[in-house]
Image 1: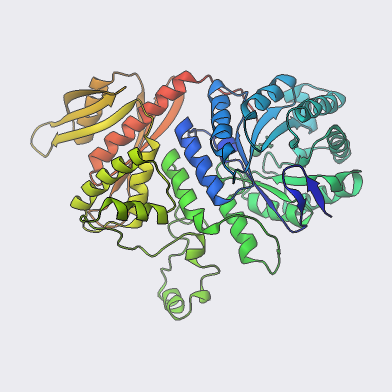
Image 2: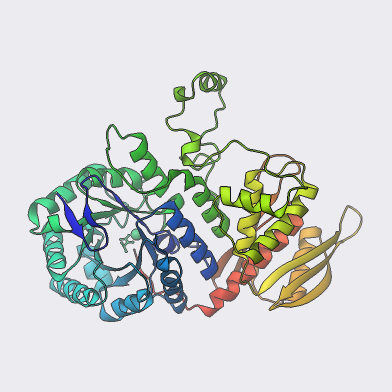
Length: 527
Ligand code: KIV
Ligand code: ZN
């Protein structure tokens, strides 16, 4: 089988296209929404990671989604190394035109059309007859092809669709001009053997199937997202749809890092190739966690804190003698480095910039100045500054670049005698404002001061504190979740001072809320 694809040309049979949907399916899950700056930062990092296709959003879902697809198309989408930028669209003219509009300026673009094909979805959700689904498929693909050479068609709930009807739909989609055909396990119901059967049937039955790329998109409701993706590859799929940290609707999607490392580690059984720079995986995972405020669980494969930690004495002994005794891949191959002392308080800007380059950051002069100032402050207060500290600090700084409310300073009086008092300075739309408030402890006083400077009706629903590294002088990493009119946002902050980190997290959450207020609710999409 050799395909000549509009975006990828002739592909070797063992080449796997990595389609990342962190910014669409991932962002769709509750609590994981990102603002424009964060999405662009993610898009840059995904490009450096080496994904082939980046689903930037669902353009018609809201004005905010449209703007972010457009902004990614006009930033990352202009780079020489840009991935194909995709927007999701349902099978209707308005959706397709909105996607086409958002993607207009991307150098490489894809319109991704989805429509459900299972009886359950057609009858109860779409209220369409099967023939109407085929007609909508054909019409929307034809329209999309007027705006993009690269068009993907997805049969939502494919794994629970009637095989004969699915085959009819796929055939119609190919004839109408689709260049990638995706058969999602939308509800995470399939077993690996179901996947193999479905792809084998489609490949055997559908004329022209050898001219398109077959894709797979698997949800993790039964914990089989990655296993099902591998089964689909065995059965002929050559595009995999994944997300960083496996985020996505409900239990999430197949995780990019697990999938890529499974293929790399088991080349004996799965001799497939892709373009992912695996040494970026940990950084990518951490960046997403910093942006969304959701850390991965410690035992998460590849990127969890314990993924390469050996606790049992017998294991430690084995690893010291020969790492391969208990390590099936090297920690370095996915980006773990030994905690290294990075820089001291006497280090200059050039050394700091050099360190950032080594860690994979390319930031502008203004951000560098702010980050350097914070690094100096940290180096004054913390005995040892690790790479992880620099990453937390720079992510914190970069993420806040365009925010309306900015943290300036905090002075605290707290202890066991009497109420705590916080004197806080914030910058709002460029103007410095200050307030002094009392509270039941330093966090309460600080949050009250934020309320005094920037009155708002949001409720605090979660406040959590973690540490970036070990030791009592470790930087604190805090998460604040705010809720307003049913909308939930998470803010993050990092600082050597836990209360400053808390103030930063609160301010970050408020900024996200401001962005959310400008967005209308995304149209419900069951995918
Ligand atoms: O899960 C799903 O079916 C989807 C489609 C839009 C591909 O996310
Ligand atoms: Zn999905």
